Amino acid sequence: MLLKYKPKQDHLKIVPLIPVSDAAKKVRLTRNQVQLLPGTNEVTDDEWLVMKDHLKRDLDDKIIVPIEKKVAASKRAPEGKAKNLAEMPTTEAVELVDNCNSPETLTKWHKEEARDEVRVHIVERMKELKMDVPKLKADSGDDEDESDDDGNGGGDEKGLAEMTVAELKAYASEKGIAVSGNKDEILAAIMEAEKN
Image 1: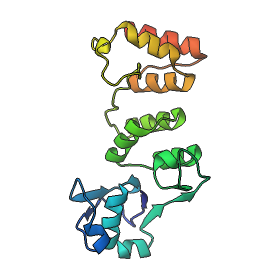
Image 2 (image 1 turned 60 degrees about the vertical axis):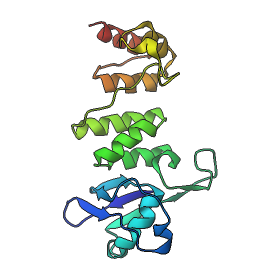
Image 3 (image 1 turned 90 degrees about the vertical axis):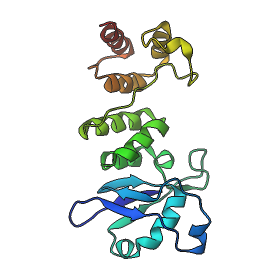
């Protein structure tokens, strides 16, 4: 569930995850509190079920606003409702990323988001917030590929060659490599930078 937190004065809000309603008492949680930072935040549906009982005044005053959008039913949003970043159309997803100040939410999105344009914005937002950007695996075939352990093996080059221009730009951005031009020029710049 996406939430927009708009306090009158910027501050962190800690919401306890203490079930009050009967429905909330039936869910299993992995943590006992949620931190909301001004801007866009994402919580699980179970956390939202528990949280909303504690946020009635903030919800009424529009300090915390749940973000849902009706979209055409698709593989991305089977119910026809977009409630998380992956279900949102690209333009709205980019806007949500640009308004996010939560390192926890950005890290979650970095792991889950597959659209190149949105990934680039996530990486740029992480850099603006001076966060460590997790390393992108160039060879995304298997998560546990032993041949990639030396960090500069032949698997990188094959994976890079198969990437789209947007994926290459995201990869270069995560590695701190300045690139421009067409796919061949970007690929050459990345390979040259990784030799050093």
